Length: 423
Image (tube, rainbow, N blue to C red; front, side, top):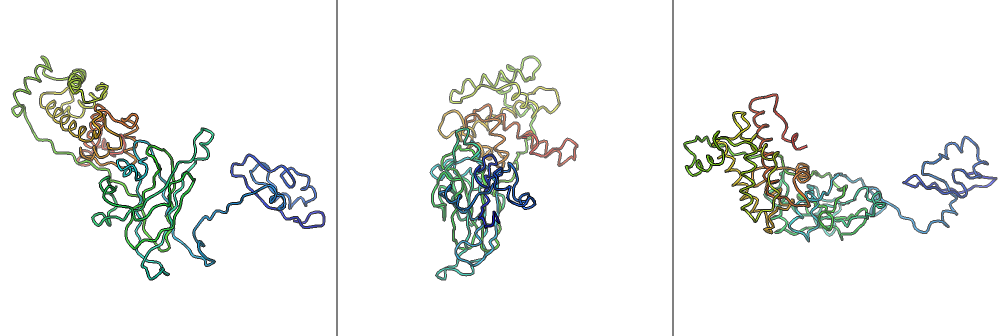
């Protein structure tokens, strides 16, 4: 820049936070700009925008460290320009649903988000005649700097890469389960788990399908993240997740004659003279039964939970359960009790929210990460689920999918998407 008969070397700097600027020579309000042509000055100086000018010699005195960020891997190794293909995934780790921690935590690692990359074309210049495909994996945690004022720092993050087994190759809707990670080792991974904003690693693998699992080091650490995958050749990539579905058993057509006599006697005693069980009576009955199962931790069924059970099986719209309806409900609760105990791994009387997804699948419901996150937020507390909330969740899911399936068959205007009631 021409200044007082000589050339002044200036450098333009931007503070990304847009609040603090240089106040010395060549700053926005400095007197040096008075000797610069007004038209030229107008195009260079913008007040209070986080950008400022300073003399290059002053820059060398004021700054002691310079980091250069490589935004894309187009020129990583030499001067030759090379265009890479890039896939970008935005994801999140959420406590109780998708924040499973690293491979040191096998009980929860599988619940982390999973992303598949298909490498089909080998590199143009393989090293040592080795047929391989190169790609760069970069994992960045989002918005962590804004949380520093709340005392939060960067999470310790990293990723692992696994080869897709033969039985799952070509499949889109599959979220690899715990058993897979217990029996398979990673074929590549980030060099270390570290509390940096971004970790990256260049990887070479034979052609095939691979799953990338990004995670925090410890479970239950919440954050949003961006996963970028750069490949030398064109490669397909996608997020892996289960399809939303329900395998609802067809209820057997039973009549009162099919009900066991002992059950009839119990029902008569519980229902009273009208031989029907109301929402209030159902609550009393179920909570009395729960009190005898001392291995279950529960606060008891609420009226809303019992109302959901009645609505699920109330065929005549009376708001009460008759003998057959109560028999069907009783059978469902017994079945779901067995599932709950199966997935109460530590016999604590509660189920881990991380195991809840497998328990729901055992009951016939497949859900994806987003729906699992909603369910955990609604029914779990401190990453644990008690028995009454588990039953309430299953009743809600069955009612939802039953209504959806009925809507498909009848084209009823009440037909809803199976996602709608959960949100």
